[in-house]
Length: 143
Image 1 (tube, rainbow, N blue to C red):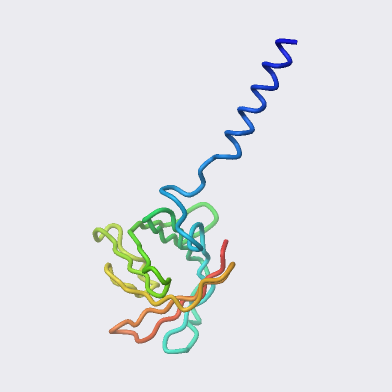
Image 2 (image 1 turned 180 degrees about the vertical axis):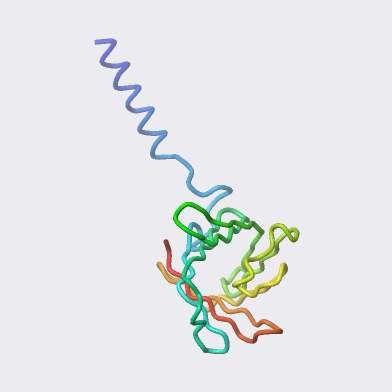
């Protein structure tokens, strides 16, 4: 009888731990949380034809990582910080140094303000007005 009660208590404790596990470090960051694949980009409404579809942005807490997949066994990752305004219309990103700068393919500066055009379900569209390139639009899908 005592072993049955002990076993049930152990199962109950494990079940509670599994149900209350944290998946969002430092709380819920809304719809951005997780990994997003950059499907395509446009500059001034023209498709960037040579983009390989190999860039991912990941959000957790106040950290953003940008990953370029080089081949199935290697990738290049850079890290920065991000924040979004209260009404989800503008995202501010910053990268601390030259080692952790935004990927060159994104045309972003180390300190950039990006307009949030759409963030709904598994789709995200962002725009960045680059002084050197013009209006860059990023099309993401949740990965």
